Structure formats: C-alpha cells, structure tokens
Image 1 (cartoon, rainbow, N blue to C red):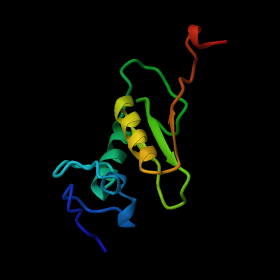
Image 2 (image 1 turned 135 degrees about the vertical axis):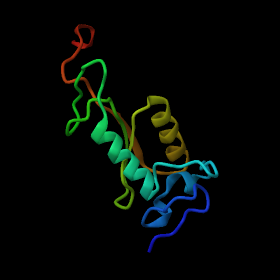
Image 3 (image 1 turned 90 degrees about the vertical axis):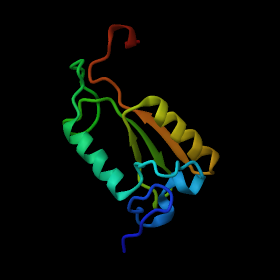
Image 4 (image 1 turned 120 degrees about the vertical axis):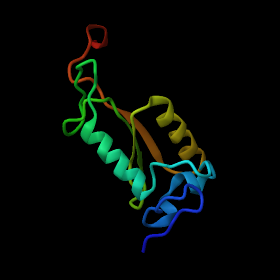
Length: 119
C-alpha cells in the first residue's frame, strides 16, 4: 500500500519506519528525500547516467563512473544509503549513528591507486 510521507510529500518506503530522515527527526518538510520510492528512482536514474569527468574508475559495481559513498546498516530491515557527495554521506552517517543505528560509512576506492596512495 503506497502511503504519502507527511514530511517530504513523496511515497513512503516499505516498511514506512525505514525512512531514517523521518525516524531521526532530521527530515526537512517539503524537501524530496532519497528514502522515498521516488528518491530511490532518482538514485537509480543517476547511477545509470553518472559519468566521472576525470575519467577515473572506481571499485564499485556496474558502469558507475562517479565516486560513491555508502552507509550500510547492521539491521536486516534497513537498506544501504548511497551518496555522491561526501559531506552529505558523512552527515547522514552521523545522524544514523546518533539515532542508535548500527552503521558503517564506506567510500569507493580508485581502481588504479595514485602514486601517493601506494604503500
């Protein structure tokens, strides 16, 4: 059953309580979010169309050329959150961690290490 989120105005995820922004009280009223059904569709479209202008490739699945940051959760009921902006990913992680979620923030590594990245 599709239900409109009272905060962002988009279709709430299933189950509804998995919307971390709403659960943590950090959702911005009227601002579209990445946790909604529409937000997931926007993310999938961006992943499909993403292209890193630098030409670098990252250790991540598919043809995604834009570096990603991923917050994973230690709960079976919570999907990972994917970000293209490091500051947004870190802020999301901090809110989730402060909200009591067991979570980890990862970032994609370059496929080929830069000379200064090699040990």
